[in-house]
Amino acid sequence: MTEIVKAPAAKIKPKVERPRLHKVILLNDDYTPREFVVVVLKAEFNVGEDQAYNIMMTAHQKGACVVAVYTKDIAESKATRATDFAQSKGYPLMFTTEPEE
Ligand code: TYC
Image (cartoon, rainbow, N blue to C red):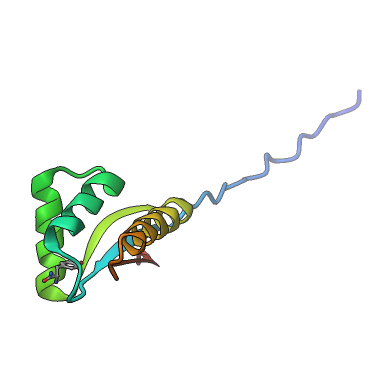
């Protein structure tokens, strides 16, 4: 009788890594009105009035503030849209992105 020897099951350890998230960072400047910053934060980042105000004031006082984290593509497109919108209204308001640690 033929003996069927089964090879040991290969141990496959799937290395699934979560995509790194990217921070959207609001930068302070001396020209953009505070109220306009709050309007942009509410429109692009779906935050309420109080949260938008707190984010704006943190950037105003410290120079920059993390607004939110997203996947790379979404972080970059939101930062670009918000920066472009401000520029279209004549303001130098800037949003940048950077990968989370
Ligand atoms: N510093 C601006 C002013 O005094 C307001 C401001 C706040 C601008 C936060 C940008 O990210 C910013 N009018």
